[in-house]
Image (tube, rainbow, N blue to C red; front, side):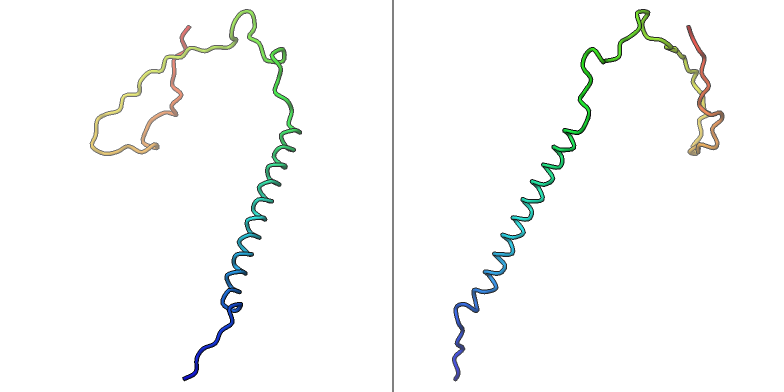
Amino acid sequence: MREATTMPGQLAAPHVTSGALLILVGVLLVAVIIAAFAWGRRLKARAPAPPTPEEQPRLPEGGPVGDVVESREPDELPRTDQRRTPHELKGDGSGSRRGS
């Protein structure tokens, strides 16, 4: 019978290669994360600063302008067992009564 003779280096070679590949992928991943972080900081540095309290909009002395008070009237639907589709409803939904 012939005995199988193998060298120890031949058995370990695929494991070393896959380990080196994992390390390379890990280093590349860390490099991409660091580059994305640096790019984000550069973009944030270029963005305009938030407005100061003096630059904030102010209400006029008379209060808010253009407030409208509306009272909508209900649109009664007859009770049926069938579901209604939008094209079966009347109007466009803008029927409102302006109050004071």
